[in-house]
Length: 170
Image (cartoon, rainbow, N blue to C red; front, side):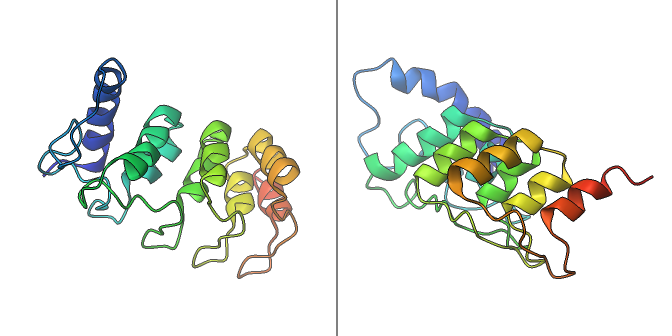
């Protein structure tokens, strides 16, 4: 069984092939990413989806391709990449995009229906995660364009600003 990162690498390799042909797979699950062990729906052993890995690594083309598969294919193997699916800690793909400041992926996710106010088990929203990793451009973007909440407290009462300032405490 392929790992999720192997699936993403396989998808990236195949995007060019699919884009340069007149047609994609026939929709029977046997297309470029529809082979055995290549389901984009099934998370890896840690509960992380292909869409989450794409968001973390700012792979806009892969994320877009996954969404296009949802619209194009009828196969149950390929459908089902849920933009608001959560991992074992309750983090969504949008949370993962905040780790490395993947603004382009965040925009795509939000355009596809990601919940900007989604919170994980610690009540971290995307703004908390961006602040924890010092992703100020991402934080600014998601607050100004998508109205994310900059003042929302987590389970311990800390706002994203608290988390950001914590980066400078030695």
